[in-house]
Image 1 (cartoon, rainbow, N blue to C red):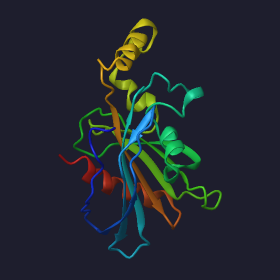
Image 2: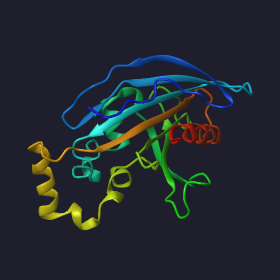
Image 3: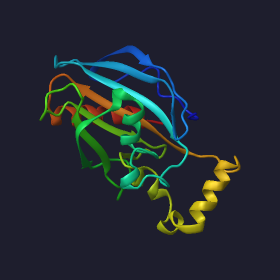
Image 4: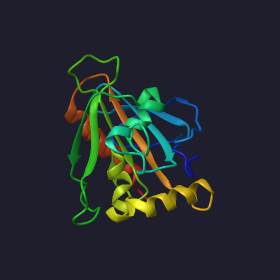
Length: 207
């Protein structure tokens, strides 16, 4: 199971935050996750509320089984959506967003996924997803979330096989974790979701 849990409380400037009923944790062979925390974010500006879902997950394999043909495994948002229906995303597309000021010169941009819930109208953008690593970087794919922590050579050949055997033997623990974050809005609109993500991000990465 993950070594951490998603926050159970949240204070967000500019929003009235209400805790909603969550979803239970689950331990799996490839991907385990803690409790899904849900919050309703009511903008003080009077805009319709958004629903924020937070979920701490942990992957046993990281990127080793996360090639495009095996995207449902490893540490990535497609794998999360396959395990947790409330994180399933239709009409999914990826987008890079510059990181806020003060997070380091030359920092890589955040990677987010935009799309809609399975029950939302086709052609609309009602959901934003990403996953925050312990370092404060946000990503969607396994190569972004875990791959940057290793050199390309380490991903190939005997080194990868050795790591896998050590993990199976319990000698080398899997540390592939991130905090899945999803914002859902009943009022479609990409700019609104991006603005809310920046507000939420500032709180989640705060020491």
